[in-house]
Structure formats: structure tokens, C-alpha cells
Image (cartoon, rainbow, N blue to C red):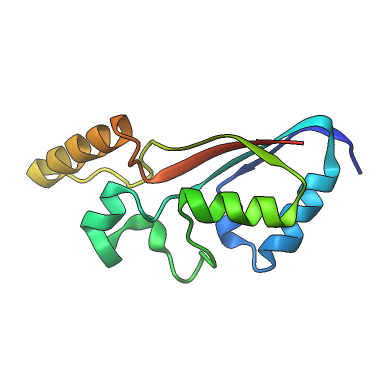
Amino acid sequence: DGPYDVVVMNHVLEHVPDLRSFVGHAGRLLAPAGILAIRVPHYKGLIPRLMGDHWFAWAPDEHVWHFSRETLERIVRESAPLRPVEIVARGAIEPPSGGLRGLAKGAVARWADRVGRGDQIVALFAR
């Protein structure tokens, strides 16, 4: 019922059909100084761009939505009275591969993380 100081959505939003309603409800659950913490796949990351349809997180049978930093911010702003505190693309959810391919993919993922092109979006929004 709330209010809550923090609501965490770790790889949740990409699975929710009625996204705006869901985010709006989460915003209403927050206390006056509450934080909404979100982590979702970032389809504009370097690994997804290189792997195309073979990227692990496309998961068309599971993921209803795919996000960029801009689209995530817009959806939250339109759905809840929240302001962005931080929105970054970092990390890697792509599972490791073996051999030379795995070494190359790991190197690209580490580099992408350092330059803000990781395949996850980590975002904090405040009331």
C-alpha cells in the first residue's frame, strides 16, 4: 500500500504489457522523498548493436519492451511525477561465450561499460 522510500524494478519493466500504468502506480507508492530504482536491458548498447538478433536480451517471447536511456526517461516522466536523478548505460547481461569469441565479447563488453554503452540501463528517479 505504501508509501515506500524505495521501489526497485530489476529487469521487470521489459516484461510488463501496460507499462505506463505500472510505472504510474509505482510512482504513487513512493514517499515524498522516495526513489524509483530501475534496471532494464539497453538495446542501444554496443553488444546489442554488434550481435543484432542474437543478443541475449532481445527475448521476443518474454520482452514486450526494449529501452534506450531516452525512452525510459520519457516513459517514467509521462507516467509518474518523478524526476531523473541518474540514467546510465553500463554492465553486461550477455552470457559469456567460450574461446576466442568469448574473449572478444568480454573485451567489447568491458570497453562498452567504460564508455557508457553497456547493455543495461541503470536509472534512479526521485519524487
